[in-house]
Length: 179
Image (cartoon, rainbow, N blue to C red; front, side):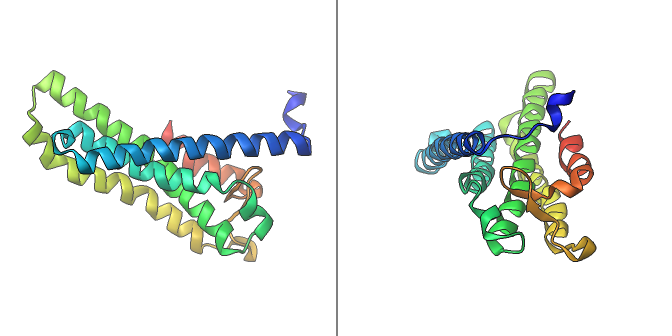
C-alpha cells in the first residue's frame, strides 16, 4: 500500500501524457470513420449501428478532451480550457457506458423477447436522449458549482476534471454510477 502515495517523475508524466494523447487521436480517427460510414452508407443505418453512431459521437467529445493532455491544467484552474476539459470528461465519458448498456439491452430484447428492429427503433431515440441528458446534469452542476470559492473542475493529475481535493465526489458521481 505504500506505493499509492508515490508520485510520478516529470518524465513519467510526460510519457503518460503522450500515450493518452496518441490513443485519443487514434480513437478520434476510429470514431470519425464510424460516423462517416454511418452517414454515407444507408444500409448501415440499423438499430445497433445507430447506437454505435451515438457512442462514436460521445467518444469524439471525450477523446477531444483527453487529446488536450495537460495543457488545460497549465492554462489554470479557472481557465475556460480547463473548465471545458472537465465538463467534456464528466459528460461524455459517462455517456459511453450508458450507451453500451442500451446496446446490451437491445441485444437482450432481440434475443430473449424476439423484438423486431422497428420496435427497437421506437425506444432507441428515448434511450439515447436519456444517455446523453443524464450525465449532462451533474456535468453542468459541477461547471457552475463553486465550493469554497473555487471551481470544482481543476487539476486531477493528468487533466482537468473534478479536482484532486474532491476525490470523494469523483468517486460517487462517476465511478460508482458506472459500476
